[in-house]
Length: 190
Image (cartoon, rainbow, N blue to C red):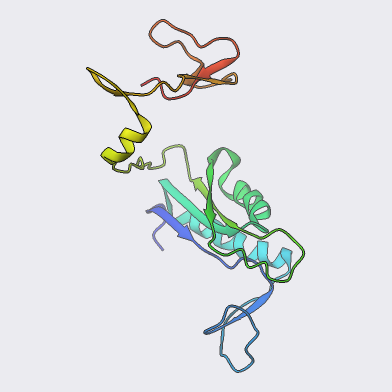
């Protein structure tokens, strides 16, 4: 084991569904199928199972390391508290919603489960961050900036948004102008 050496960890642990998953099927409906894995835990044993792994993962992570933990919507709240315990609440960076293509709500009288979550934690405040950027197509620019003059394309979307910024740059002065008392800047001052 090489402690403090891993910069990025992605885990997709069992979701604590209390089901048996078989090869070639999603649940235990087919009796002749071979068992792929069992996800048979009580809540307490599931959290203990995951806690041990998270402590081990944290030891392996470098100071600039990040953890992305994929979990379903039913267990997210429990697992978030567990991760807060292992990594510290201050090292919770964000959660990412993963939308499913099929909510699988065939016969139950509940709303369909349409999302999973990916919890994003850092070992410290020194984590690596690579800005996500997509190429913007000319056709997209013309939709977003649909007005044109001699200088080029532009839009008339307001620079201010409703709400007061408690912290951060969106409530700060920009080029000698402050947002009004009930608004903040819609985008980065840069």
